[in-house]
Amino acid sequence: MKKIIFSVHLAFLIGLSACTCNEATKVACVGDSITEGAGVWPQSELAYPVVLDSLLGDQYTVINLGRSATTMLRDGDFPYWTAKEFSNVFAFEPEVIIIKLGTNDTKPQNWDAAKYESSYQAMIDTFKTIPTNPKIYVCLPVPVFKTKWGINDSTVVNGVIPIVKKVAEHNNLPVINLYDPMLDKGAMFFDSIHPDARGAAAMAEIIAREIM
Image (cartoon, rainbow, N blue to C red; front, side, top):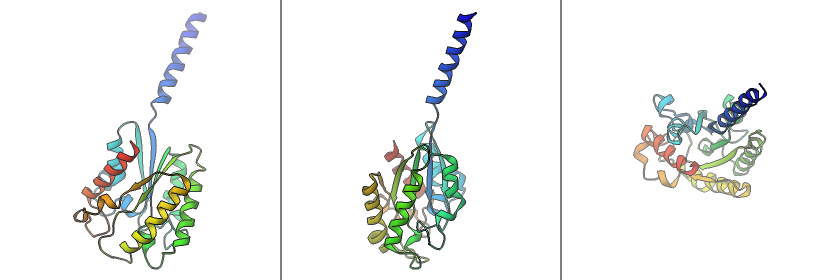
């Protein structure tokens, strides 16, 4: 009887161990409308986080936590900090976080270099409190091919990108460059700001290569 009980107990532990080892790595994609998939239909199939989930395979589970119009700035016209998606990052408890915020911060009413940097650092510090101790990737924004709604490429290049690189270096975080590889893909941006399905897929491929 003792041998039988021991065998059952051992089998249970082995099964539990195998189950734990095979759990998918959870990836949270933090961002604005470009992450959410604005203008891409259906978003549930073609937004970049969904494509990324497919590219990474069964070992990863990717969730889209993008929210249109949001800023990194805590006092921007729509801070990501106040969106429900921000709270959902903590509820999801990811092992990997991909941050792509900054495009809406380039609007004249939002842009403030010092505040952008301090807000970025604060978000990193806040995400580091998640119990899973997630690996954080920071993204350089995609290019802005035409100024619209105040969003402009000059501030992306001369303001956002240098600060993202600086924050990444200070925190020893990997940087995913979505700017340079997308420079020749203007035809994939249907309104010069947002990528279409082809552009979203190209972004997902770049990010997947970095993660894998």
